[in-house]
Length: 456
Image (cartoon, rainbow, N blue to C red; front, side, top):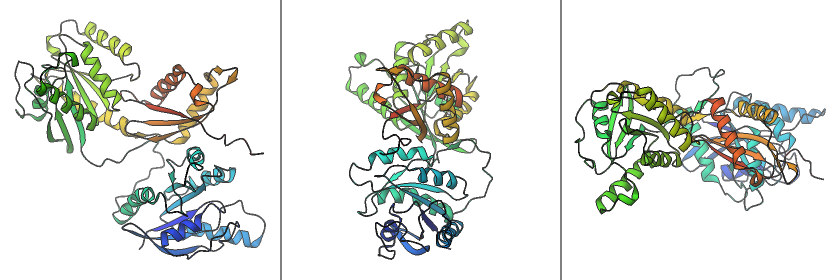
């Protein structure tokens, strides 16, 4: 059976124009007059190499008393029941309307996936409406111009996975009680082992693999380029990068070492989780913290592995010293997991990969819009934004726009006037409330037209 995609939206947002664009013919009438489409229309659509059926529907609107209007809405409801996924189309140039919000609330309750489409995004006029549509709580909107054929590549990217999943079904499960979701993994977990020279990175890799996979030695600089190793941990594929030690840039003179450092930086960039190995006998030096900062700037999850732990006498004091330095030097990433171990003897090694896996899951997390906005309401009640130029700064809405790392958009009045201290407060509260320890959090304040103020 062909995959069926239903196009929904209030009247005159461009549903029939999109239907014609996907079908490649002018099968549906198009006119600026609202309500031209009454019956649902099914067409054979193609988008790139995708083949599917698309259903054009009457505009969603609160049903009047008339028999005709009621029948139109019944046709739309029947189309939803027959479909495998839905596109909710809004007019980006008009912005989000109360009708859009009303039907977004209804569509969140249906069992099929709903994709948010911001039509009429050609040029700059549709940009405010595109950003404003995040407030509908249906995830990241896709901006298109059905009339001019713009944005069809982005439309392909969001439809293709749904068709693939329908054609290659997996076991069904009940997800009603799931509070969070995770970004779909497209390959093995990628882990980079980083640190200063001679802290035991290669010894750690050999200990994890249970074999002498890379050369080790007491002298610094044995590893010169980033070595990738494919590994199976408890049935899960993992790609591990053993990297060259990073010294302070002022001390790097030789061309070979400069190339090695650049190779290590690339390994961090392409990793999901970075394990920063520290020498327990010297603990966190300035260069260790510089490496940690670079990992955070790249948006990677971070694990601290304290090597040579068996050589430490006062372990409590050593941990307190490290924790204090991390809080002062990396306040933007609190709760970084710390694993104590000895790469040479293998003590504590078994605790590393569970910590890596947990950090990876947090890095992938997707938080629902509902709990996020309940959190925002509590924030506004208990610690509202400060005044700026005698006027209250306002926060209206929050949504997570992507994962890896968790990235949020907060829609506000005058976003450029918000003090950095208040933004940090929001980030720290997000981390504490939703358990986002050890991963960078990106929070962007965005402005735009106030959806609660009616145009005069």
